[in-house]
Amino acid sequence: FLRCCYFHNTFYNTTSGPPFHVEHIDLRLCTHFIYAYARIDSAANTIKAANPRLEEGPLGMYRKFTDIKNSDPSVKAMLSLGGPRERSEAFDSITATEQTIKSFALKAVHFLRDRDFDGLDIDWMYPDNASRKERLNKLLKALRIAFNHDNQAFVLLLTLAGPGLRTQVDAGFDVPEIAIYVDFVLVKAYKLVMPNRRYATFSSALFNNPNSALDPTLNVNYSVHYWNDLGLPYRKLVVGLTGEGRYLKLTNWAEITPGSPVKQEIERGAYYNVTSGMLYPQICAEVKKNPKNRHFDQAQMNPYFVHEDAWVGYEDKESLGTKLQWMINLSVAGFMFAGLQEDDFTGQLCGDGKYPLLTSIYHRIMRLLSETSDTSESPTLATEPYRPSKGEESGTVLAYLAFVFVLAGTVTGYGLYVFLSKHPLMSFSE
Image (cartoon, rainbow, N blue to C red; front, side, top):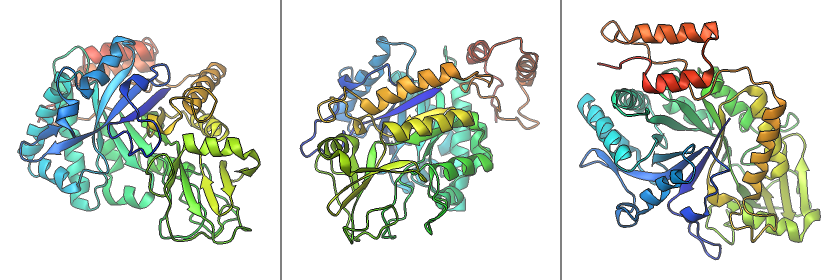
């Protein structure tokens, strides 16, 4: 069960909260750590550091980040490209022609290997038309080909960070094609809100409230099943979780239940500048001071905290535990946590030890997995490889043999993964 955690190089813009550094990372909590974000150098048609002075070089943040593997070689250290500060025009530039796409993919391999990253996460926010949808397909295909042709001890991982909102998925993501090229899609099953609607709503409700008139698509259950319905296998689907709560101001102090009207103004938390949001360290500190103000919505399976006109819908141990049980029942590949900084990584505010959310998740996963008979294939194996055209037939015999091994049950999921890591399913050629 994958546990993917983002490390943000901006550390959030703190006002009085502690900054986050590589040294704060607890390797026990996650299997894949993802450094966010690198940028696109349109002129050179390659990846570039967001802050070269701080990130590049033997003492830079990149090297400090990938060096975490020295303490635990089993963890993966990946790099995320894009994010909210990268414009779609930058992705347009690297996908302008077949040649620029191929060149970028080859340069990406060199960039990642040179800095000891184990893979690349593409976070294009977001392709919004048919042309960009096709460009994303071509970019992912080129990266997959380049990664598979890279003659190293292990094949670089390729993941995609995808939106949870149906409208954004429809506009820019060709899910069946994406599923062919990537190892996993990290679905951002949070911020499932419409900012122009003035109601107290959760950012990441697990289920829709059937008695509510609010949009029934704005919940984790819908988002995850929608990606699957469009063609993404559950074994390639990683469900995004967040420690960021939705912070709003009520119109009427007497109306506090989810769906109550709120003012148009958005608020920011006191410790971190997060638009219309408050991070868990501050939320848990407030709940600790006023525990009676914490409520739980049994329909949507999320807690909310109310103090005077302040309303915060958020995640806690209870809601995340419910989501994890739901994920394991679906046999998804794992979960993604949107930012290590979103948990109480110092343990100073919640009084519940370091990383109370992620620690709770870790222990619950270990317990749930020990109670669950896992008969599914290993999620780390891409069991639906790219099918070559007539001119791309090299390696198909090996792919067929791998398929037969799986059917015969003669090779375990892990053993097959190791075998195929050294002998890719097929040679990608154009």
